[in-house]
Length: 623
Image (cartoon, rainbow, N blue to C red; front, side):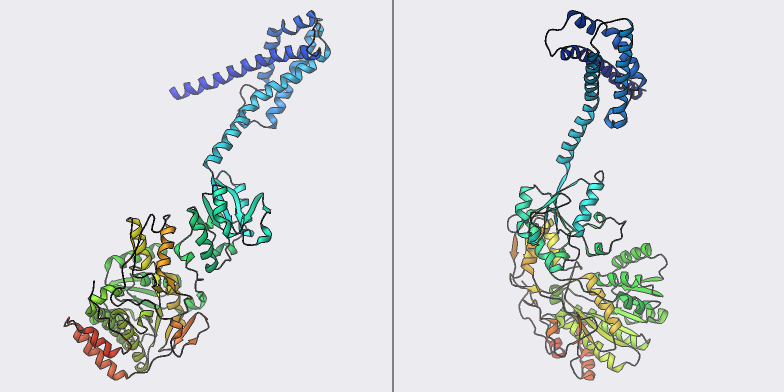
């Protein structure tokens, strides 16, 4: 009730205000009309008296006519041409009426008086009513400018034009204000796109950000390579602006799709300087369709992504096998939500437990096995080397043997570049896993065994970027072992795509490796990640050099340098030919090594070195 009363009072107050203004406008128009008629000179007394002594009558006529045209109940903040015409007609009818009755009663006034009064009255009435809308529009524009996000677009191509059009056509939904455009084409500098100036190339980003008070940068070059994106990002991140990017998928958008809907924040994957590997998805999906697939370590970073991509291919059954119940549960629930029709089994168990593993093979008869279960943390395995042998070597041996016995068609081992001339027990244990695969492939008549070897995986558990992010979140310092240390990097989807593509190419005994481009300097990566989070290296967040850890290499070796490497249909994937060794002796030595690992003695690394002759044992003490 109080609210309604307040509303009525507000409406009544507005009507009273308009009445007062209209009466004042009439008085002003009447006096101005007679003065203007005589050029503000001497006005005959009769005309002067007649111009104001009938104002009460004129006022009642004015209010009546204006009421007929609803000039007191219109919503003037939305006033348009209709309201303007109503004011014109109301003023015209008022003048016609007053002219008629004053002529009838022989009230002396110049004929031009009525014309001038009409014009002045129309201007005053219209000006007041529309001034509200004009002032409101000005205030709104000022407020919008103060709240708007000053935006720079990098790239003056079709994506740029689409962004500008979409923002201009949907101002209610977007508060971006496109201030300037950057493009490396020097011919475009000084030109305008949809009214927005092209102000320079990427070397002018910081200058333009300062000049136009930029808050947000949109990289709108969906066709650009990651190496180009890396160069642009290197400049743009110095502005400390929010940076977004139009992804490659925007190139194939339909006419009704929103390009602004595809925008996403720049991620660390965008500035690594290498384009993502492309695989034949149709070929992969055909190879997995209607197959029974087993993923060991299915709850881990690689294993869970394997499960996601396999699930998309409509397998007959997907089996997740993992020792860690929380990880297995997470990926299980994700797949159940996303693929309700997927025939999914989640089994808790260890690949070290032969009997437990065998029951899985007996019950489900997998056709393709992806063996991702492993201990992979280099420093942890250096101080627990026996566990590396138990889990990595025995686990692989158990899974490989059962695959042969139960006639699995393909067995794919997830390996690592650290198996190349290893300097740590984790890499050496994975090299033994590769040797198991090569040995089993020669002995088996049922199964094709292959290994897939790749570098560090971005975003995986224990990898460097999640570590950096946690260190930054806690205020630093970010720790790097050496300023010169370099690593090859892959994204998790890339690694899994390689594994799945390898399963298609597999004929048996191969080690598949990926050309991962140039190695990344970890120290430079640390600086980029700090800037990515909005801080300045060694100003806001310190970088601390800690020294190489036991078993850690300064440089990872290029995978493409391995002897006997040959190309596959995918030019970024190559095959390393198996190194010959005595398989029977290897199996005997392996059996002895596994038994020794269960004694938990401290000299297991030396025994590993006798099997993996390329392994250099790091004798440094753990600091």
